[in-house]
Image (cartoon, rainbow, N blue to C red):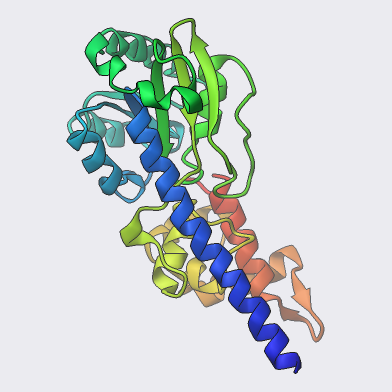
Length: 288
C-alpha cells in the first residue's frame, strides 16, 4: 500500500514536470510570435551551449529582428570577446554585474526599432489582448536559464519589475515592462534547448548545472556534475581552492575536509561538498 502511494505521488510529480517542460518552450515560442525584436541573452562563457537554435530558426522563419546580447563578459578574457565580434551580428556586449554595455544596447534597440515597418506592426493586432497596444514595439527577451535575462530587463528599464532569483529558471510567468514611450520589453522563463534537455541522462543534466540551467540545489548526483566540470576546469578549480589534485574525487575529498563538510565517522559528505563546489561555480566565485 505504501509503495502504491509513493509510486502515484512520484508519477504525478513527473507528469507535472513534463507539463512544465512543454509549457515553457511554448511560452518562448509565443514571445517570438508576438515580438517585433528578439533579444537572445547568451552567457559569454558558454556561447554555443546557451544558444537556442530552435528558437533562432523560428525567428528567421518569421523574419523577425534579432539582437544577440552577450552577457557575463566580465567573466571571460578579452580574446574571447574578439571571437564574439566575428561570430554574432548584430550583437551587444554587456555585463549586468558591472552594468557595462547597457547604453550601447539601449541605443541598438532604438535603432533597430526604427527599422520595423508599420505593416509588420499591423500583423500582430491579434495579440493586443495579451500584450497591449499594438502601436508599441515589442522586444521579447529569450535565453537560457540564468543567462541574465531578468537582470538585463531591470537595468534597461531602470526598475526592478522583473523577478530575479538565485534558482535556475526563476522567472515563472511572462512579464511586460516599459522601456520607453514606444517600446515594451517582454520577459519569459528561461528555456533549455530541446537537444540539451533530459530528465535521465546524467551527462546532459550535469551540463545543465554547469551552464546554469539547473540550480546546484536541484540537481541529482551533484558529484557527477563536479566530475564533468573538473574535466574542463581543473586549473580553475585548483587555483580557486588552492589545492593540487588528480581527479574530482580527490577534489571533493580535500574541499570537504577543508570546509568541514563531514558526516558521522569523520567522512566527507560528498553530496553537500559537491553542491558547494557547484554553488561557487554558478555564482561565478570560481573564475572561468
